[in-house]
Length: 327
Length: 250
Image (cartoon, rainbow over all chains, first blue to last red; front, side, top):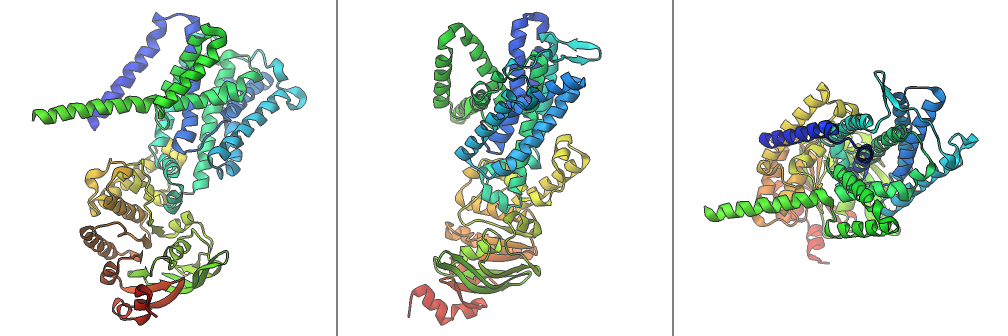
């Protein structure tokens, strides 16, 4: 057991070092823009996974939280001249409160009812951005000139420097996720997902923990949205629709594998990569992409993560069987 | 410890439990028996807070508990097992037991994220206790097995220790012997007696007469939602109403 932990820790460390020094080798601005998007999605989907993968509540409206993070942070830093890191935090906290308020009624719903409710939420936020009171969000024109993050006098405006910031945030968010999962709270989430009646019988306040999952998930996704705003520095409504964001986020989680640390990471990387590679096919992009998703869901219904671990287990069992025969 | 006063449950026109008076005494094994459809499980669900009595009252430790939801009943010191096994199937044996301890863990989300001293100490204590409980029923070697892949008999045992994990004052066992073979049943009666020795008060719903007669201190008999008899095992065995209910006599 102890040996296994050491092995995976070493593997993670090596991976991190490789990622961290890779800019020395690769210097393409474009590649870093793609990787930055991947990292944003890692944060957003890690949050979605806590909600969907662990507590068993689906959301088709996470674009709404992403939008609250992006617009909230952008507006605060534009109008109040606050440091982006502070506005990002405030925006994410606002999204958490919105998530909690949404979750109180929504946590009573299941399956398709919850899907519809969260779709409605995403749509409400989208409409609010398009037709905001006093037009503070500038409707379809969008918001320009969002300040870049400055740290210790350095302005993080190049893709490579933003890459380092996003990498650190992604690691922190994954670390926190892991801590939540392996705690009383994480156990309560999984218990509710596995058997709600029994969780209630074992003294878990189901509503409270469902609401908590929504809040945490909203924080993650909104923070990713806020980071996005200060990375791209221009935001407009079309980024935050259900088709453009909510569904892809859900696809990434399903694709990578629900309820795991690396599932959302793999999902974010692979789906972003596929979308980029398919840019070249122009009009056929969506058809190929959709077909691909269908195939994956048919052959790996529980995501890449469990597909890989399934293969690893089979190989291990074969090895053991062979060893048994020899003995 | 637990008292029901004219407790009645109606589902529409159907009277599932009709004006039942029960009294469960501390430190005893009390059994609730009756033929199929007698309202045993409904009574059970009423006591544990799943159903609210339509009429009458339920008192737990002298406090009226009508309409208090199950999770709060658990916090008050009542924990239960389920007739149709309700384990957290994807979780390991150990994690199932740890979930059972949930109401006794006082640290919150922030402690979990920062892994404070308090949370580490509590988690450590929980793991030790889980170890004890798994040993109690001989599941230690299966700590990492997903609950869903345990054999049936072991799933029943896991249900029992998961319920014991919160140190309840009253432990409700809903047909713990269902689906067990004779050997397993003998082991189960011993386990239940050992649970009593640990100081737990037990309310047992069970079909298996032999098991009930052997281990119960006091028995209530239900038929068609009405209490038809109560008494010591020997009295119940010779009660003509009970025999009639079970054998279908006039």
